[in-house]
Length: 358
Ligand code: UD1
Image 1 (cartoon, protein in one colour):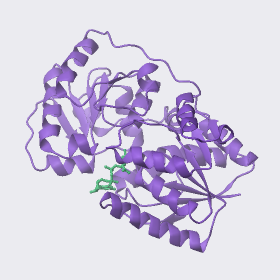
Image 2 (image 1 turned 30 degrees about the horizontal axis):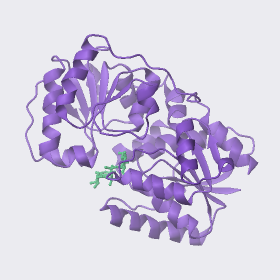
Image 3 (image 1 turned 60 degrees about the horizontal axis):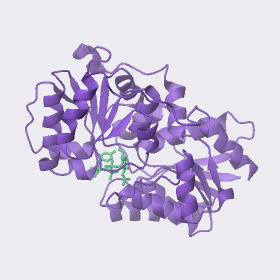
């Protein structure tokens, strides 16, 4: 069987690394092409992940780059269709929910290529997020579903997916985290600020609803800075967020803006932090496994298990909700989490076993 493995943006590289690792360790060695759509193209969002995660260079880079939702999707579809015309695989495997995921899934499906979706079936219910639309569209045309939780399987069945196509395999993002946990690297900021374990915060913000306007972004940053009792707050700034921050001057003593970090440095910082505040989905899974308190600055989550089982709390987007959560944290009353079922480092292996059996 020949498979195209699709990766385009930062979280994709982390998930696809687990699958490639499992393929390389398997005696059958599935014949694959790694296709990088080029959605993320900077060294910092793409190149460094290939290095950190020992990913082979892509067999094909579609070099699509940025653009509006439609422009980016269209560029990826046109470029991937050309690649498929040159050589058509038996299956196209997509991961997650970014524009590259659904653009490639639609393109391959229309050329009669089977689609496998890793991280299928998760739903936030928030159709304002492009990722939710990407998930629904991808799942509606997928032939094989690999899920991270039993709930994701239930969501798929509710939408008519047949039971024998749904495989609960665990979480590829966690495979990668567990595989690299002994290789995490201290970032430069650690020594520069003389950071101490359990004595600083990490924040990440990149959702359009939080960051695209200063009137929403600044009150969040101000509230975090005010309620963190003077502890350092480290903020690796996503390029999308930087564009907005450049239009303003920030003056919060304990808030430290840095460039986005590579995978090994970022997770070192998270693993040793007091807590993380984020609007990412993947990070809530990683903090759950590292048992680090996590405050999610969104109104919904497609990953309810990080709240019900893990260390995550959904605070919403109103900055007023940050102070009570911080108080609870400083009183040492944050709930301890557990690790969701099958988040054990073997999801990639299970996926490869199933692919071999098809
Ligand atoms: C994308 C995903 C999001 C994921 C995030 C991880 C979609 C709809 N969104 O959001 O789900 O959580 O990646 O980071 O697919 N840019 C650069 N350098 C790059 C790439 C992008 O500077 O290498 C800038 C561009 O100006 C671009 C902006 O960042 O306009 C946003 O990039 P884009 O890929 O469109 O979406 P993200 O916000 O990164």
